[in-house]
Image 1: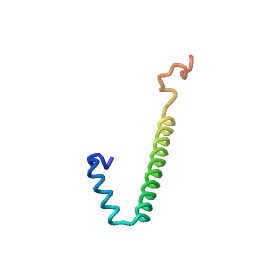
Image 2: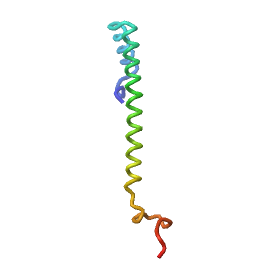
Image 3: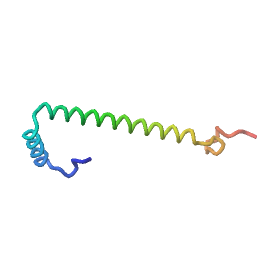
Length: 74
């Protein structure tokens, strides 16, 4: 997380400076953009993780599996 080393008072100073530099409409647009970006990144990460897990399932060879129920009796 980026704000890992930022304390409460540093965060308050950053917010006050941002309020002084920008108007409320600009700050709202920036907050919306950050929220949408965060949502998009979370969705993309979840999709990549599901594709990786599906790929891992497809790569398993049932003949070399340690599960005895998948082996043929013979």
